[in-house]
Image 1 (cartoon, one colour):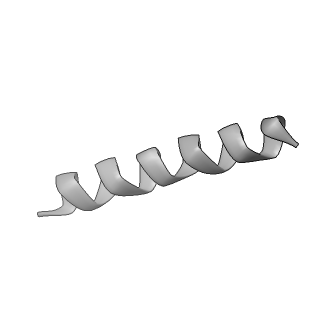
Image 2 (image 1 turned 90 degrees about the vertical axis):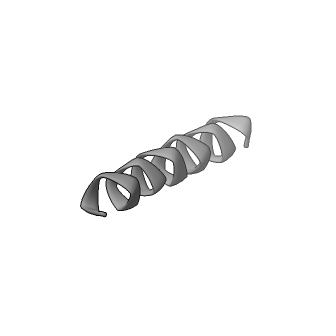
Length: 23
């Protein structure tokens, strides 16, 4: 299911952006 993988990658990117800005 490429769509699920894409969604997980997108969520991970959002988490990384959040952690990066949190610093």
